[in-house]
Image (cartoon, rainbow, N blue to C red; front, side):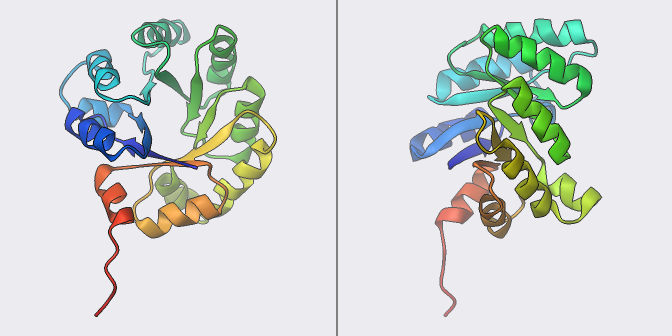
Length: 198
């Protein structure tokens, strides 16, 4: 089980690096946009600051553009960059080709166990369900995470849960079978600091 930082801020990356136990950094287009900088520039800085993997989501409007963007991001640090690809039928095919070419990939915005199953068939390293979105749209988000974890069991694909809003949700996702969780820095701190009621 791994704890990942969900942030595109260089200062958060430095703090996470100092904690030692944070294994990777996940970013998304919203987090990168909040920095006010081009995504690949942010990625380039994060991989210099942080020793572990850094996830970068492709956003180009066409399939060909997403492939080009994936290669451009990968080449910044081939040993550290993981390409996040939104889960659609077209993108599953694209992910399979990128994986065959040696690029580590993750399918993100995975909302159903069927999508998790397809992701495992492409041999991507991670499927990424957004727990908060699942909760709002489907209700029992942890049941979905549990089904995803069961379907990828025995494959090379693991469940990375994100969109977690509390320590209790982090624990629930792990108990539901998520292999890893990605959370903001403040939530990492909240997981470690526990004060008994007096």
